[in-house]
Amino acid sequence: MTEFEKEVAQRLDATRKNREMCKNAASFLSASTQPQYSYNFFWQGRPIIQYPQDIVALQELIWSIKPDLIIETGIAHGGSLIFSASMLAQLDMADAIEAGTKIDPRQSNRKALGIDIDIRAHNRAAIEAHPMASRIQMIEGSSIDLEVIEQVKSIVTGYAKVLVCLDSNHTHAHARAELELYAPLTSVGSYCVVFDTVIEDLPAEMFPERPWGPGDNPKTAVWDYLKTHPEFEIDKMIDNKLLISVAPEGYLKRIS
Image (cartoon, rainbow, N blue to C red; front, side):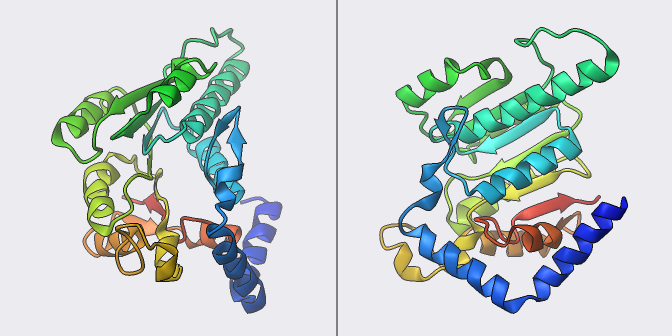
């Protein structure tokens, strides 16, 4: 650990103990949810529907882990999938610079794999027309359908390092099923990131027309999953760093 990294760790520990700062961050997160603050951001021209803090956290993880495959459940407009593909392109470029070799920007051994129960035609067309498309593969179907997971597993066998992001149906039952199916695909030292765990921390009235809410959401699924899966642990340092995140206690590191 460098001296600067030690200083960061000290600051994050102080942040965790700063009750006023944590309270203000939680207030902003709650106040910004109803007006759909996260819907205002784009990645390379496509809506990403994420808080900037989570985007930066994922960038740090991808650059550090250097995965060959990023699996994402939930595609929506495709911004997150394009973000993953663009990060993989940067890894390819960095590898080529280090090795002193040339690369074809359209060719890569790395892939971003997206799964969604409904890939709308206009979103699919926009993703397939994007410069990052050569690094993207999509599967249409329920992420917990056995045929879909078999397709995913067959793809995973060709890759050494896998990072997983779960961001589809936010009910406890669905998120818990995704964890059982996808978390084991995560490489040791990599992460399974479970989004929208913040639902547990928000008022129930924010989800009047949704099948999820406090007590029934991805965070409750994470808590239940971790009871029987000691190979994963919550990375609290990321929570302390971000403060504003849709995935508190959702950054799960595979340690064994």
